[in-house]
Image (cartoon, rainbow, N blue to C red; front, side, top):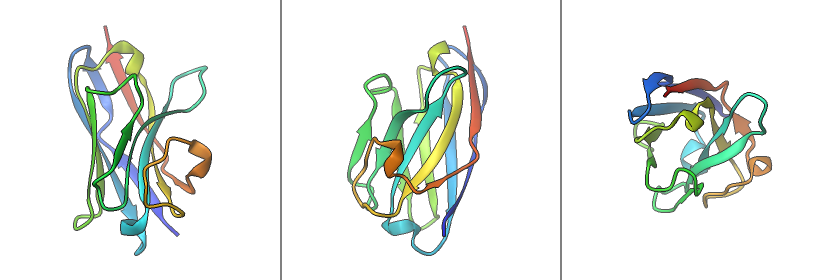
Length: 125
């Protein structure tokens, strides 16, 4: 069993930056692919970024490519999402997720087995 706790959300002006953190617990974390998803009010949850278990493979949604960067530190048991050049349309609750069945990054929410409670990111115009 893996528990995920996100932190780092908040209010930021357009063009600003935030770094989200995800702290997984569980001894198998380092073997899992990890991902970030987001859900805006009235919209479906959407893929943001994912990283393979070794950290060498990443995948990004087109909407965040070049602005967001996902990383992981298996020694510190942390996953990060560095967000830059934020836009009002990035406003959402951001969720960290773990895929126990794959070591490669994936974009499908249904493939992920464990989810955090989410952290709110609000970008003002």
